[in-house]
Length: 239
Image (cartoon, rainbow, N blue to C red; front, side, top):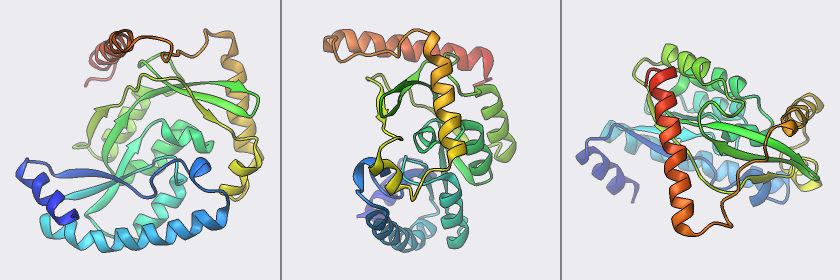
């Protein structure tokens, strides 16, 4: 199946294909660190099996940081594999859900970047942790100009894709036992920094919600958000 997909990608003119290591959000999909580690071993084996197929078709597999691995974990896996055909799709917002600071994520992953899911994010506190939402460029906490600069310095040919998801905020229950168990414990520094930032944002308007709207209204909202991002990218990011 993978070979057929990569052959189709080549025929369509693609040179980079995004993939994930472990599907789903780590803190939702697994009830314990042991279950996550079992999936981790299977996923690394799958990546090892996929590498020769990517090499054969000369297509880069770009593994996204997808709320499954800390950036350091992902870098360790790819360095262990040591393939020029398996790199990273840097998502500039996902790793906040694992209590990483956005520029920390970018700096760690930039040397392996083959593609980018560019997004801005905002967060607010709630009882079990924090709410996390994509917002139009320039309205959140991600330093987008610095992010683009770092990624371009690491790989001048890196491709940027806009990922502006118009939806209700995600719940990141970082204060619950399950969340902390699946991560093998949470450093107090990272937890306090993230929750402090969420509290600092409380004076701003609430995070956007769209589930109460009709589909047509949701579509109009999404279009407005995309238009805002495109204008910001053109005027501020040189994209």
